[in-house]
Image (cartoon, rainbow, N blue to C red):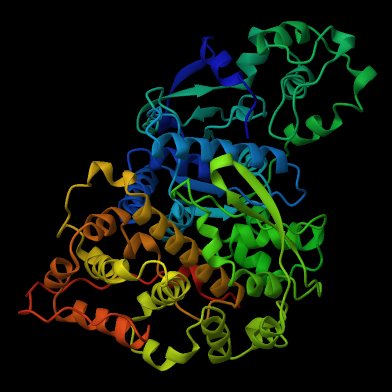
Length: 576
């Protein structure tokens, strides 16, 4: 969230002072604010590097103070539809600027990788910090928990200048585009100093968002105080100074008062909230429990929790913006996911918001209907009791939806940490093989090579080819694959996680993948050892019948054994 121009206004004052963090016993972090900042400097899609960067930051901080991370929930009231749409358009415009070489993005213009938030959640789960996912916007829960703990907030939203944060607010931006170093002396803002410096009552301070605007609404006029619409922050603050009586327009500003007035609550109270079940009683409690600990997709939860409209908001992938959206390749899969999520409502034609015309920066609504085939595969699927079904039944549903039923026996021979990735790869390839037959071999080899070597990723790290973003076909194929991988993970969650989940932070580096995708297939194959070649053979010969014959086997390349990947089962284990 954000209040336009408020951050720049505060920075021009002397209200942010230096504070010694060693005097603090704990800190509450706005999770996605940290996610965006730590992604700076990470090659797009280098999930291994990003995962390590997050875990390193959190573990280093956690040695000194107790760390709490709060992740944004969902817009269950659809209050931010227009704001989300505007931000999506801005992301598309940024991607177009990069792709067309119009201009370079500034250090503050962030376009994070498609799976970055998922990998960030994985890293938080695997770190020894306390965390939870908020019901809605994280801001209120961040402030509520911080006031209960009497500690500062670490975030980037300008709304934190308005909340009554008793322990102070530490901006996450260090002023140079990086992350504030939380060791020793740090800059800190206290709302008491703000009120005192500008003669503001607490009620007057809470009126600033109403007049200037925030993510929920635009600016508003207050004729009673001679405040016009679109007034500057400075003008609004000067007009509010010394005012203590707002009875004349109390009803008009009630929503803002309600949002920015926050009572303290404990970690247990906030992390165990079942509000979403009460807001929409059709949402099963097990889904809410999984969601609160980061084990159920935000996109799926938003689709479930919203009572007013059923819209599926695709996340924008970094892709070739001159082409149809990478989401097109998942159109055959989506009806199953929509049908499964809506099994409680018996709704068969959910309106879906689909990103179709990236070059014109527009979104279109598309009706998705369930066919007889969809109903036959889903059968008597019911989200309420799906986890009561045997794991084998749920596995088969997933394999049928992603067109892998015929290879279920072969899939059992694939290592657990690779099964979901292989299912996503096979489904993607079956969807697009007709158009990229000549690139199929190189793509699969690069994918296998990346999976196979990222366990010891110090090997074969070729410097990123700088013009790689200028190779739109390859970027677009990878964007399609990532979107399919995302839906496989989501549907696995909806089914109660019958397949083990391994984070892409352990498995996959887009940088490594693209470097090898630019190479000749024979060269890639020669770099694989016997185990890697066996994996390639299994995918091409058994998991995708009719695939091109593999290159002639060369002498085995001997390498030291790779360490085992960490299967992130603690995140996607079923809750009792």
